[in-house]
Length: 427
Figure 1 (cartoon, one colour):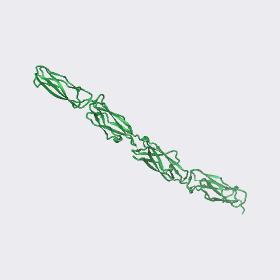
Figure 2 (cartoon, helix red, strand yellow):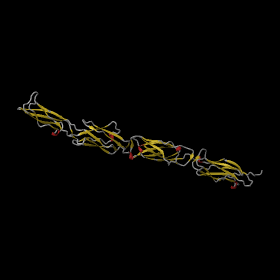
Figure 3 (cartoon, one colour):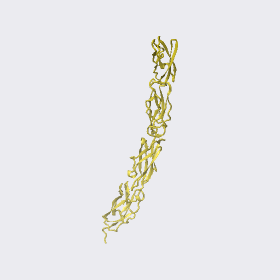
Figure 4 (cartoon, one colour):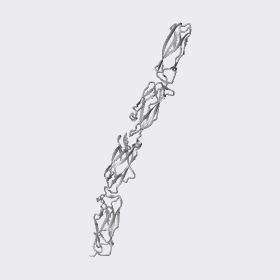
């Protein structure tokens, strides 16, 4: 600053000027905010004098302040004064460091901190508003709300707590980015950024069921996958069906195992599974279904029973062929016991052979022989065996033995006969 006489005027003797102040403050100017000399002297023969007014750094964030500086002196009996207005502007560091956890689980809370530089405070409240960045995959609706953020006057920092809602919705982790509002002169180290992880997945499960729970070959069942745990899905959940090794139903006896989709927002999905018919006699079989699901949600499997549709009375009726035959004593005839054409048994069938009631009365057991039982092997349709006419040394009429067949669970329909001729009979 300079205090001076009018242009061209000098003083013959030193003139002492006393600077003074009147603090017109925009905000809280105090004597500690500035310094200047109490007096300055315009030397004899001079017309002016310069001096310094210093704005003292105070580590306070504050608004500009006005210092009204007055200078007064008695100049050869005349009291003279003047005024100069000096605005003191803030040069404090206004960089706010933003920090906090990177993740929060649904139903939990996290706290972020907004902190001024070390040793710096503000003379008035610093109010910060937060707005969601358009690039966020989460929304403000995923939080219980955003509290007001204010660094109080004189405080070095402020904390803000975010609480993520528990929404009973299975979903992938989402990221929320909150941008601080623009405040003149302030900068921020980063936006608030954190991921919201799903808190509902741990309670979720998927249960498989079938309607009906059992079908006959050629029928279909609706397989349902249902979410448990009281949750829904934010995105489609895909359940991939698989066949457990405990199944007894062959792969060719059912349709391809597909996938079940539980649509977003839903709690269940279905898939129709068809079974195939065949020409096999078999016991009731099982298809044990398991599965894997999106998000590794555990899947509880189920068992579908499939009953045999081939096992009708007609398909279980045995036949002896040929129906009639003639054999001379000492000879034999080959017989076949069989299921209906193209019918295959998956288990061995034991057939009991006996002499039937329609046999000739004179025919005795020394006249013939055949096995007591024959077995139709598993995975076959028939079995052959021999009936032998034995030589007995007697001259006799032709005799007619009839063989009776039987088996577990099989119907006996007719007797088949053959003529037993004596090859030594006289004419």
